[in-house]
Length: 341
Image (cartoon, rainbow, N blue to C red; front, top):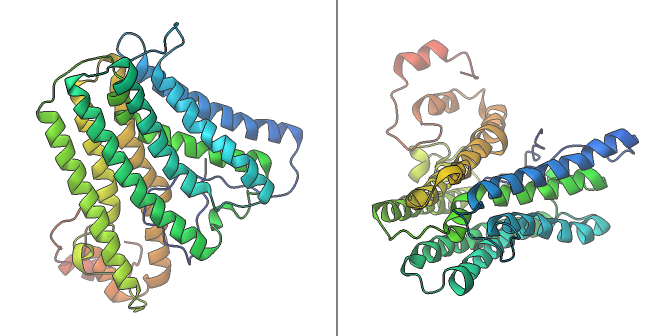
């Protein structure tokens, strides 16, 4: 689906759940049917992915042949969105959208962890793995949630929803898409929390946690640097600190920390559980192709594309991975007249 691009005044610094465009005008019955069908398809994708990581015998099951724990986690993730959608649609507000997503991350991760340590795998020595991985989700979600909540209540609205929050089907689909965002991003952690495979801690765990920490620090430091720079109101692009070596170091940090969570689970993945690789791949795709880099790069080009110094900056600084600054040299001279290069 297409993604609603926020108005120029907004400056998202995270991977964001997909939101979907539309208009408030009444729709033909067939159009409404397909819009509602979109929510059903999204739910099916979430359930299918979680069946892949939770099928018997590799995943823990609900007693009485009632299916994988992971599948119930997916339904809870989407169900929470639907519950909060009802009063939000009635009030015509999107203020609780991002907060609900952040809370859902924590609730789903904690619920699957508690089921494991209290019921399915009590006392297991290697419960350290799911405990640590869940704690990392809580830390990440708390930071993300606090940032997004402060922003929505400061701005009063989220421009992504201007045209869809009056449409029941489209607004519902946006909330359902957030459930998919939570579910697919958490696939690695859900696998770790619901696996029936008992594997001692090993090198992959420590490597994964180290990668997560590197990503988290990159994101946190980059965001603080950008916040401090914004207060200067220079009207220019940021080119200090980590931003001197990457045009989007916070996004690189976000990608990196979810790669770290995937690495932690390498020792427990069996068979179809390797579908957990969708976790980092989904985050990377969302940021690099949908709601992250393309949007901000286009906005920057529209704002500063005619400035030779900005074009030199683009030739010099890596778009994503922090790296040594390039010498624009002859390449800059050759393309100076082309702002899009």
